[in-house]
Each structure stands twice: as structure tokens, then as C-alpha cells.
Image (cartoon, rainbow, N blue to C red):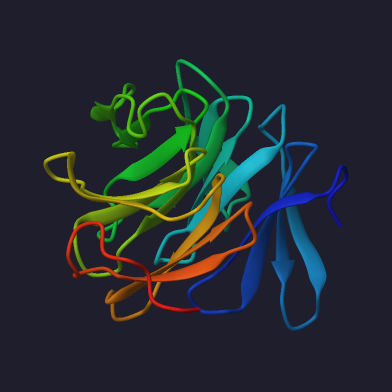
Length: 213
């Protein structure tokens, strides 16, 4: 499969294919029914930190520890555009709910918003988790809200339009390693290096304790 181990995976919206990212920097496209490799996309020089498929199931975005963000045309098997984050390896990438903005985070300790038509970021949330690395991102499906998790164990909720923090909840004793949002946007699940799985009420009071998981 992926040389150097698989570091990222995502499934297309039509559920016909999947993307995997490897420690070798390659992005591979797999046909799910046949389990065959469709194409091998080369552009990153270090571990792929994350990948997302656009709703058209033709374009995809990948981000790497080498600080690069690449948009791919999967049908033509080629690079459409590439951007470079100025500082620090990227550890997470996501698409805004309307897919107009690519969001990256990582060792820079910032959350960075990109319009792929522009060469530079459209906004940077500096020090999104204070002095901690931002380790996970999860946009809500039907609003401009974004959840982020950090190496400080904190989960934060942001308004992407205003880049304002709406909630700040601390429950993990070590870094947040993953975030997922329920289909109805009402609940958020966070997992951490502490081994805990926590379920949050997205629209609950700021700092509310998580539900039992």
C-alpha cells in the first residue's frame, strides 16, 4: 500500500474510491470495489498529514509535513495548484462546509485559511491554542463553525467567517488526536492521547462537561 506507512485516508462522496497518504509523501487513489490502485500522485516530499475530496469527486486536496498544500485533478491525475505554508509542518487539513476555504493547522500553532485562487492565506488565526500545536480540525457540515483540537488537550469552536473563538473546552489530559462531527452538527467527538473518547454538545454552554462515551 503506502511506503513508510499510511498517514492519512479519506473516502469519496460517492463511496467509489478512497485516497490514502503515505510517509513517502505520495497520495494514492484506490477503487474500493476492486481494491485496485487507480493512480499514484507525487508532489509532497514528506509525510502526508491529511486529504479531503471535494463534492464533485474530481478534485482533492492534500497537505504534508513538508508544509505544502496541493489541489489535485483526480480524473486527469495531475496537480492543479500548490501552496506553501510559511512556518511549521502541517498536521491537519479540512474543507469549509461550502468548500470555498481550505483550512490547515500544525506546528506553526496557527489555523490558516486559504482560498486556492489566491497565492497567500486569506486569514490566519495566530496562536489558536496559545503556545500549543493545533493537532486536529473538524468543520461542521452545515454552518461556518470549525472545531480545533490542540496538544494542550483543549477543544475550541470557531466561527470561520469572523475567526472568533466561540467556546473553549478542556477535558483531555494530553493532546487531542482526532475530531469528528455528527451528520446533524449537534455533537462533536474528540479523541486524545490520554485514551479518552469524549462527546460534546456543540450548541451547549461554553465549557460544558462532555457526555459519557
